[in-house]
Length: 285
Image (cartoon, rainbow, N blue to C red; front, side, top):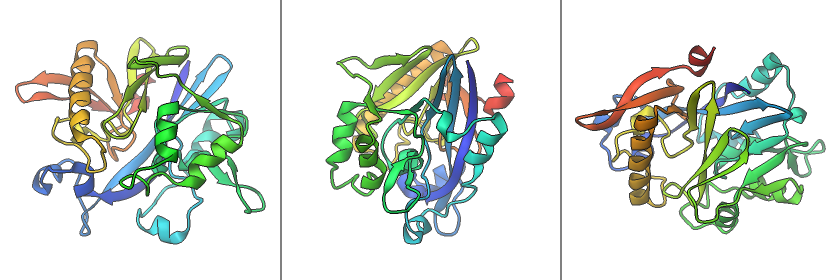
């Protein structure tokens, strides 16, 4: 197995929305805001090579929407995905699987693209199975008013129409496995049945945090995004996960932290906190 970290682009989101009830005077220390109260965020993915599989975990925001949509998010460096693919010798057609932690636009938008005639949409990874789960798919295709703006039809329905959609089973348990060396952790605080890949790699356990922990600034328990649909469940899920992460020395991989790709955590008198931070490739190479 070989894993590559890749940033599909950077964007900006309102700091208050990203930290919920936590005052700006506190969260601004770890995630400084600009004059418009916007903070910088990454959109990282993982590329996993193993056996005859090439797996992509999350696909960033893509480029389908119009200028008005993208103007809200101040995108930058959105060409990094193609550059990284070229560096490691792959093309989009080489992927066998696309694992989507959830279907919010900044996680799945890049999985669907315009067709050549720009009359409709098609999978960006034409030979890949696209993995979601039945519970989250139903939630995303029948969205509540709170999340409707995050579940864009053009990002979601073309996956099903292509015939490439597959579901990871969630049958009462908290974890499931469809790939060797990769388990799926299900969590429900941010959105229904979000999936976190838990990967055994080079003697370590790496967990792709998606939106359970967008950044190291979200590790303290009360630091919960305003976007979360069930914040009290997020609190419980964070506490359980972080205690497990300390006990088992997990490496946390951050999809959205603009500065820190990875960290380990430790117990302190204030609760679980960051132990060491590092870049993925510095640690594993």
